[in-house]
Amino acid sequence: MAIAIVVPRLGWSMEEGTFAEWLKKEGEVVNAGDMLFVLEGEKASQEIESFDSGILYIPPDAPQPGDAVVVGQRLGFLLAEGEAPPKSNEPAVSQESRQAPSAGRKQAVAPTARRVERESPTAKRLSTAASPRARRKAHELGIDWTTVTGSGRNGRVRERDVVASSQSRATPPTSPTQPTRVAVPGSVRPLSAIRRTIAQRMIAAVQQSAPVTLTTRTDASRLVAVREQFKAGGAKIVPSFSDILVKLVASLLRECPELNACWYDDAVYVYDEINVAIAIDTDRGLVAPVLRQADTLSLEEIAVQSGRLIEQARTGRLSESDYRGGTFTITNLGMFDIDFFTPIINLPQAAILGVGRITDEPIVVESQVVPGKVLSLSLTFDHRVIDGAPAARWLQRLTQWIRQPLEPPLAE
Image (cartoon, rainbow, N blue to C red; front, side, top):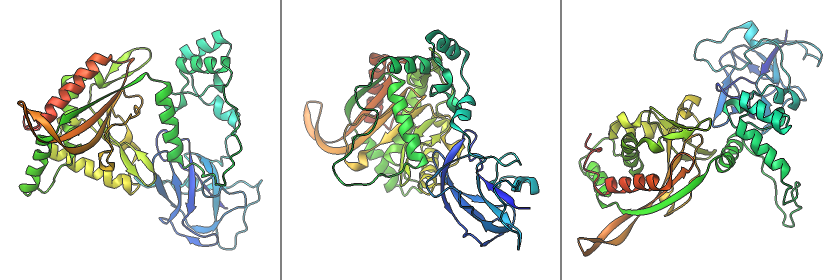
């Protein structure tokens, strides 16, 4: 009997993705262990392995490259030699029912053996959970909570989502709901899964927080000198400026934990761990993997781990676990000659530090004008979690450490 090829779950929270391409041609023999197709999750692409053999058959209604697909959706079939393709009303046996995947192998089938078709929008809404407070608020406001887009984990609808939905419905739109016709020739570029995720998270960060950005400049001469010492000393691992800043920021968050927090159920939640996410530019879009317990790592350990994350991010080999648990984010645009910018908070975190370029400028030291290296910094924080003055003191303290990097914590 034909073996159905269906969309697997790439990560613990993935419910849908984007079909990228087949790695085998229709009619080609597929052996167990062959890479069969490419699936894009929220943040990475992954080649999916087949754990059965057969001849690939791609039905006419199969998803095309760039189409959105849901977990369990049928993509194609593996047929035996001489076997006719199944008709639309014939059942197909899942690969998983024929052979369980070995540990650590990428599954090419859904968690169940039954055939699963594309989930309808109604069924998808009804599968979304809502908090008790959200349900009560929806009842008070006369809103069907199943129509509300949730901001919680796995799309869970929270009270603030219901309130925001009520406010948006009460306020008439100020612009047309349909896009206006453009006069200039062009083309529409379909969104990739990672582009769609970035767009959703950026809008959510602006709408669901109270962002404020502080900027400052500081003398980074000794910061530059520290890195030059690593080079001159012939160190195997030379930390980048971002690595040094990760170490300083992580140590400062340990001393001043107000920014190592988030807004959670109408209260401030302070994290016990300091896990610094680092924003990385890739061909597929922006990602932010996490350096866990960065305050406990030496500068060399931070350099090694960040180097691994950067290499895996740019080759599309980051796992879902690499993204989890961040408590503070650092993003660096200095290599593009940017001084100041307004970084957007990486929810549910409360703050993000934007790092600009280091420029050669004259500075005043003990009433004398001398050559210096000036670094620009931009701190965006959620004003619900922390006020402007303590956020400014934190940034001021960081600039002091940058001016004196040979003192702890780099000495640790």
